[in-house]
Image (tube, rainbow, N blue to C red; front, top):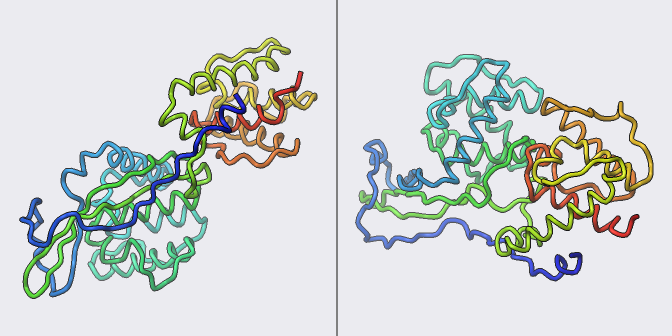
Length: 338
């Protein structure tokens, strides 16, 4: 098993080169551009998602997950977001979200009705967000006051994804969400358009950082039959230890997400009893499960193992790939333990 994994070729992350035109300048307009988007100054450009891309399952999933995350964060403020563009463009929600994530209060007016007031509020919020994200004040950025206030969903999604990644939100965003965006530009009084591929999310490791794909990515994508072999091997390894206390697992994906078996497993592998007051033996809530997994990670580091790349949140959310990575690290260290 060990040699099998180490021999698998790694699939390198496919890097999107950014924006590139796929239509010729003279191609007929293939999408309906809203009337407002015709009101451009010369050399000004505006963008919108190609209508067909709205049907992309990954885009739908991304939007749904981000809306759920915002609503969870702002539940105590009784704020409910239903539509990304309509609810976030005016600067009412973003300040609350930034304040909740940073535990700091922004110096913005609570209610602004005028367009200029909304833009001024957005300007303060985006300056704060760019500072938090370590971005230059002067850009260029994938979002701006004008793009967000004009309900540009691409700009809004870019900002939300950046914030979710930076603050390590307890959510799992779909990887490699790439959509087509129509860019309309006015040149010499004539409207020209091109369609470009826009990457909203890439391939990330469990810390939210862009990464190279590893052997487990290869297994999931190209060798699902071998994946079953790996899972069986890890179950055998785990049960060899858990059987000592009359416990047994059969499903890696669902039986490790509460952190109980991980805590017990570390004690068995290291030869000590984990005091029951250190973790929740029958966790019910997400926070209790998160405590357990975090505690097991601490035990791993106390034993001299490197800090797991997986986030505790991903284990609690039953992300199979993250769980396999954690268990495989234990297997590598303790495979010869009796």
